[in-house]
Length: 355
Image (cartoon, rainbow, N blue to C red):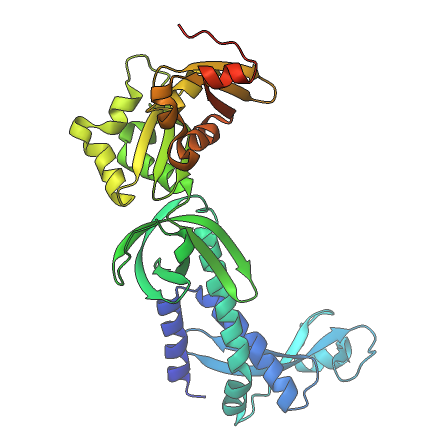
């Protein structure tokens, strides 16, 4: 085996793949030991040693020193051993190099697949270690490939899968562009690590707010909940435990600078920034924005059910197109919300007097 070429190949793997050199040499020694036993009808008492500085590969056969020999192929008595090594003790071994002249050719052919497998395992472990704790986080990547169902995003050491069903409706994604994506799942299966990505997940909006609004990142402003209809509208409830902080104004920014950056990233999606309130009735009223003049009644606190009475002018605003506004408000507040006018409430036997 060309030792210089062998060492250069290992060094290249370490540099390009970022794998610990010891992992590669351990895999090689295991593979070469197997190759020797298979091709030279060897006894089980052999080991392969690789000099990682010189790249030299040597095979050794060893005998174990015992008090009483039970297998003459692998053991010898202390008396026999001391003829070879005077100060040897029971339990120690005597080794003899048995490297065949043509071992390099045979070993290379036999060990190739085992080594590749070990390298792939190490790469998978590196990827899982790097991305395993990034689930539910936002990262940036390069749009590298596309097929009928997915975009493949280059994240550096690996690729993530962005299903087209997880993009923002109406947005155009160009090959070679850098985009922000939200990691929804990281798993390791038989085919290797899979990193699933999204741009229409509600968590994507949450991470964008953390990125664009320093007060959120610093914990001055807190996000209570997010409800999203990707491509249409998002409602996000915020608050601050500091009385001198305006959470909504801070999120909007001077002349809308902060919120406009987020809207641009979301391809023009509308965003309602809602003031969270400990009073569920007040919170529901806020969540139904842009509707006004609402009367909210908590009908069942345990089941989290509420009745909202609106005038005719605000009915359509409260419900929204195809029910989107009230549906998002319900998800934001975690309440089942029933919206009615005074007339509709009376028809259902509910007498309400609006102030």
